[in-house]
Length: 102
Image (cartoon, rainbow, N blue to C red; front, side):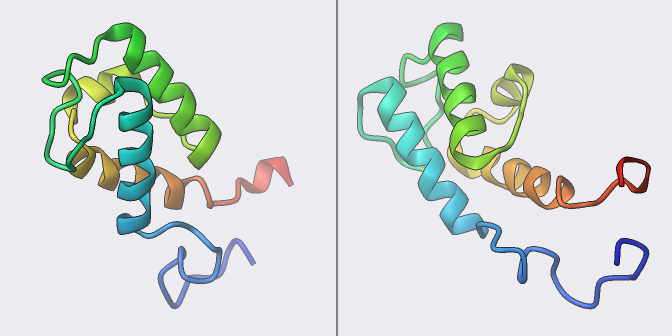
C-alpha cells in the first residue's frame, strides 16, 4: 500500500530501468538526434547540439522513458553520465502514488 514504508529499492519490483540501462537509452537518443557517435562523457552541446535538437531529445526521453525533464536540466547536465542519475531519480520519484488521486 502507498502508506507502507518500502523495504527495498522501489525500482527493484516495478521494472524500472537501472542507471546503466538509462544511460544506454540516453546514448541512443543522443546519437539519433545528433547523428554522430556519442560517449557517455560527451557534452550534448559540444557535439553541435542546439536548442532545437535539445527539444527533440527531450521529446524522445519522454516517449522512451516516460520521464519529463526540462531543457534547463539538459543545459545543467549536458552529458549522458550527468543526466542519467537525474532521469533515474525522476523515474523512481514518479512511482509514488498520490492518495488524493486514488
